[in-house]
Length: 356
Image 1 (spheres, one colour):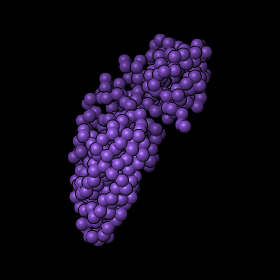
Image 2 (cartoon, rainbow, N blue to C red):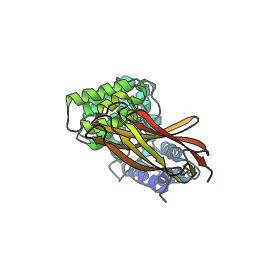
Image 3 (tube, rainbow, N blue to C red):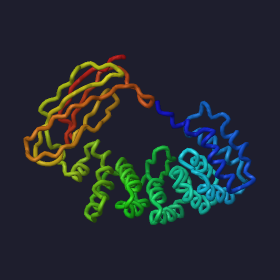
Image 4 (cartoon, one colour):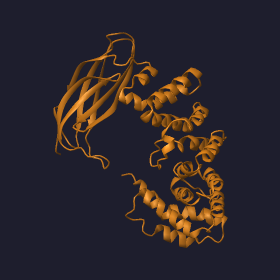
């Protein structure tokens, strides 16, 4: 079984951070810091562990933030910091440097190649909107792919695990960053750009579709791959503009047959089904399926095929797992399986989820 992520924040990761800081600042109370950072970790979840270690770090660093930030900045290259050993350092900066924008952003720029600063930059965007964005525009021009990615990732409207910055929910200020990085040579950067546009699409779908259409018209070596990853959320909802971007006719296609292997499936088991789809015209068929119950409808990718002629049929078999997971409960009861072809529901079949 894989190690839970929270356990990656542990005495060993605190020790790596301590070694880096002690290599820069001889007065650093290394052993005391590691002991305080390690005490009480059991029972804490991931982000609470990060905050706990960051508090111990703050108690061990010199009291003035500019000096503390300088120490953390210089420590990054002294040891092999990674996401887990470096995250408490960026968390310390996120909490303590609000009155020292330049020093904080400079320290995050130094740390982010080792431990991404995307979460730590959020309070500075919230409090120093224009000045912080000016710094991030500069990061988008950097030779370092980690800094270029931080410019895109740190300004995402819906950054997972990141604090919400209300003014970023309206598209505009971050668009120059995306324009600069849309055809970046680094896949690491381009992936962030696509995720950023996918975030925009959740609240402003027409803006996202228009942006992607403009990028396509402007060309580039990697724009098509960015586009396909960026529209995945809109394709899940059947947005006509997104379907047109990938060449699929909205609503095009019909279901010839939908067969469920059983009309009852137990929690922990799989629902197996086979669907045959007929095309209305040549071009892509974007296939999704949805599992619906009262108050819930979840959509999943089923496949994508390009057909050469109207009437051409394709058959897809799939199984859907009802294995319990910690983030979601599936109460027994009636369900409906829906088949979605190019954004339109074209067939459905009822079934029952039973207790395990």
